[in-house]
Length: 430
Image (cartoon, rainbow, N blue to C red; front, side, top):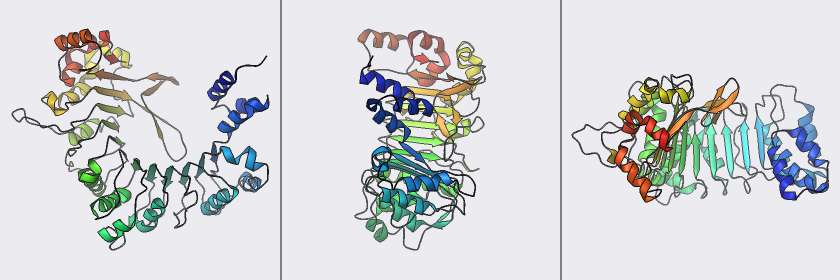
């Protein structure tokens, strides 16, 4: 019996996390082979923890130069991971050069090695769209900026690590910023230090500098005052703030002196804050403004549609989110923070949804990765959050009229007074 190829490929796709199953499927027939290879070889992970270096890495590099590799392996590689390689192993630059020489053209590259420094002549410059760098050696900022600008197709840039960067004299000047051009397709920037955003601000202010097209900014683990100053310089630069649509703060902490509230971001549609339990109140009270009741607020975030608050610890005091719906005391902290967002709904005129959830950390190469809206109970994932939808302008006319009569406009009031009613109408999801 032969199954339709669409069904076979769906089964193969569902087995992507189980390599023995993919290997077995690849031996069934030639028709199944390309899909299996697509999953088996899409990520080439050359990570190693300790010296001496495993022979498998050098053997693989030798295998790539054989005639059969050009058909069976190289065309399917989409991402390359080189992490945790300590001194004494084959240098990262030599590995990447060997891959490029063999014909590997990945779209994504992750490098997290203590001895690696970006070079002036990067490999994969013509194919790379996603670049993640975990740098740990203190270095000059100029080589890093020149390295980033050498990828014309780059769309997502993630720069982190413990390295400290020193700007050369005149590097932030208009002359230098105008000479170096950001990749035109760059739309997502993930930062754990401010070296890139500091240079982008200089670029935005330079005559003839790069046009800023970054619509998504993710700020991770920013804690020092000078780091926050760099972030706020970026957000207050009109060329940067005028195009940003999504802003996320993950695991950030503030200095003793609270920073200035977020500036006017006219195009921002989604704002996400991920924090620990102890820092939740600080994140909300410092990032979001407080307007006295006697002052008519202007549109702080006029285009904001979704505000999300995630906690990496037990933010909700109830045993489970479901039990919290029936116990208003469990939502006391949540209610307190949302009630202080604004005295008037005009503050966020386009707000449609507020999400509160707990998140866990899943292991991944190069650091923890967020597992959105999932909490683990006894080893099994469950949804751990709720969303409140203020859907004026959507749905049928009868639904809109009914919501308008019984539900307050203020999101804080919905959380405080109408929780069970929201559950009954399907506006509140737990």
